[in-house]
Image 1 (cartoon, rainbow, N blue to C red):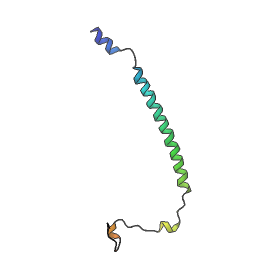
Image 2 (image 1 turned 60 degrees about the vertical axis):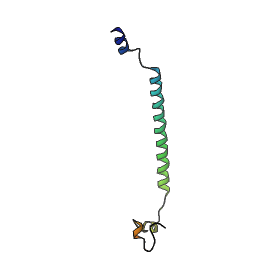
Image 3 (image 1 turned 45 degrees about the horizontal axis):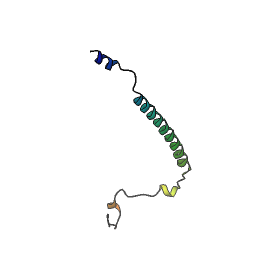
Image 4 (image 1 turned 45 degrees about the vertical axis):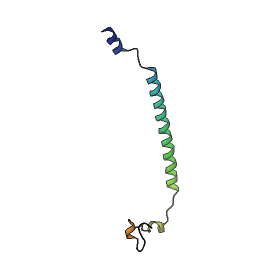
Length: 74
């Protein structure tokens, strides 16, 4: 019974588990920072794109069957 209680109470957090949690938190923080930077870059790129009115008027067929005279797969 004493061994079961001692095993249940334990000696504290496992240092390996604690180190792994710290490593994962650091990695999440780094990935969130990278995501923020990439979003800023993407926003700047989107702002720099200019689409002329001619490009907006171009229609693209939804399927190859709509393309007149062209085989679907050649």
